[in-house]
Length: 186
Image 1 (cartoon, rainbow, N blue to C red):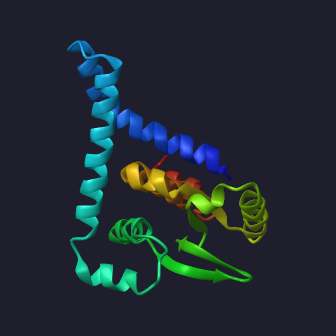
Image 2: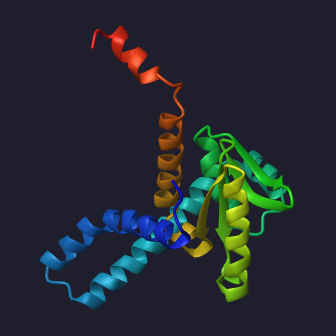
């Protein structure tokens, strides 16, 4: 199942907003106006970003290894650190000729962190061509804007985990579920 960057971005934003929603509702119930709730949301985003940056810089050994891979951003390096701590198989700056992808996860999911240069019409055309090529080879492509990754890291990681789990559940051997059920007497 392929999803567009717009769909992925919307899903990550929904996850992030779902985390904030109970707090926002509490503020509304306490009589806060829209401006106060928006300010609280900005502070919440900044606090999440700071926690992410602090958490991902805890291991200098891994950070040093990631820095040696010449990531284009600190956010990218730190996201990869968080993914690595989950035990996922990661290949950074992996070449799938004629392209090099930011990260290949579990040998099927191409993770691309899009910075602002990906916002132009020409860049979008190139990305679309590249994504079609990668999909034709059997890869699933996950694109996320760097700013969204920075502000909604936990939601981004959760979305990636969901994609990996879904793929793993679909890749059971044929009849694997039936065999397991028959062993349980069902």
